Length: 51
Image (cartoon, rainbow, N blue to C red; front, side):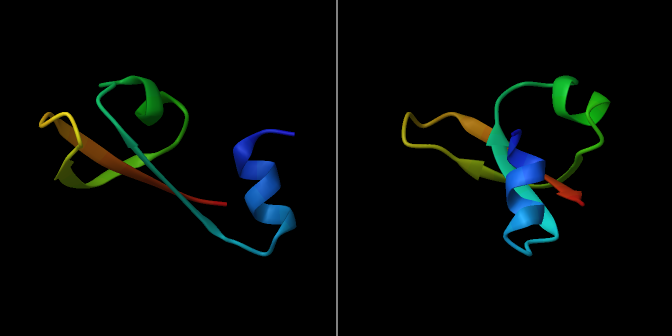
């Protein structure tokens, strides 16, 4: 079971992922919605997908 299937089975309809990866999550249907500074001091993008 992937993360989207698991979230859907638990009645969650949005998945949020913080990541430094550019381009990968957009190809999987996620949209960038915000940015954050992670524990290492780098900037991550927060991606969201409605399922």
